[in-house]
Amino acid sequence: MIETISNTDELRGDLAAKGLKPTYQRIMILDYLNKHKSKHLTVERIYEALAKKMPMLSLTTVYNTLNSFLKAGLVSAITITGTEVRYDLTSTPHHHFLCRQCGQIIDVDVRCPIANRKNINGCKIEEVHGYFKGLCKECAKKQRKQ
Image (cartoon, rainbow, N blue to C red; front, side, top):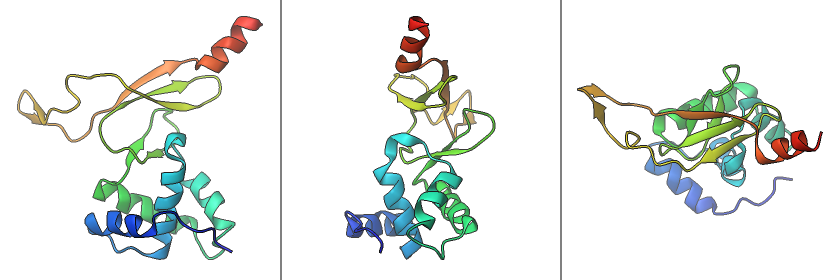
């Protein structure tokens, strides 16, 4: 049985406000992203989690849904690792930190003077990405103890 979705009406409204039909699959995927905001999830991870509850869900549906969310501005795509795309529900410009040891991606609140600009030298800005890479607090602590 599918767990109860929190704020179903709000999720429907978010989808409709972006011009997306609030299908069951879209609501479930958006709900999952909402419940795991800080995780920066891959398509595969979302699929694996939801397929247990929705056996008729396909990997293609998750890809297509995330692409429609991306086009509508509901999510942003992060390619900080260079090998996979992660999805972030926070679509306003912000930076990320990648721990090279454990692979965790963390939102970083850094004031970037360019992040909210619409253009630079006459060039239209469509996306802003700021990435930091190193060791997270936990991995740095473990490394110091060794």
